[in-house]
Length: 410
Image (cartoon, rainbow, N blue to C red):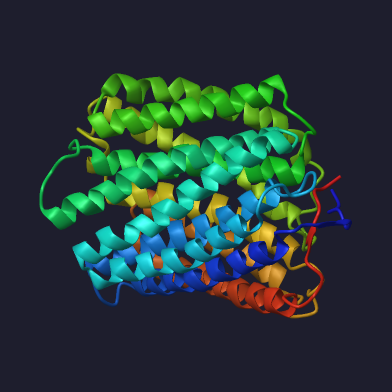
């Protein structure tokens, strides 16, 4: 498959590139802590590990997803309403999220509780903007998936902010499974839908809604809600009901996207191969998740929070790096098209180094062979650093150029 070369004009192009630059900047925090932790030279404090997680999930992934929202829902028709809403939301997210990440680094519970609110406001604002844009654009499966994903993100983020309030006030008003509900909403309900939306948008982009696509999104959204409530309230029946919904959705997704994978030139330095890898990674990720949830349902683990950390880390990195980093690097590669003269070799390093290192890293976690982390951590982390530098420079070069973004593949 060849990538489309026809750029689109987007009124939000400057905000999109700006958000991508902010996401890349915060990603350096995640990678730096991850490399240090992977070598096991020292035992990192809890607040540093929480900073690593939130710099990745919020700073890198959610800033990138907000850029995706403005890109995907800003393509069709003249822009309606006040464009300052997009500028304001972009500014709030680009400033609020890094400050929230620093609040985790501080270890101060009150600071975390305070600075969680601007981030939640930004996320809710994006959802309101999407709902307002929905009637003005052609609804497609990727757009429907993004709407469902951001709705789930609002649910998970609300739980997260309430957890911070609970910790800061030293009082418990949430169920015992609040952390499990927060994590499952963010990783399962939110990121699975986003990963499927991006891969379908850039590889297939069916012009409209189809029943298989609607069923796929509906099952994923339902499954995300079921597992969130099940984890929050520790209801085994809801956790069990999640499994068939996710299985059916991933089968539909694999059948719908399978033909596109056969057309990708995996050796060519195009963004298509990043999007193509999302498909098997999502299938693997959901397989790992179903295995873990089955352990909870069968009482192998009393609650989600009691699943061994090394299994959780294997699952998380398959999602955060395999699905989301491939998705976002693919989008940023397209958003920075026109500046490829800077480090033209970087695409190969990012693709092969990040994915090869990640596969080795996840295998060491899944088999609990932690000593091998020292081999794969620098490969994965170093390749990501090359990507961060490359795309940051390219996006900066394009700042004063005409605001264009690559269009959808033919």
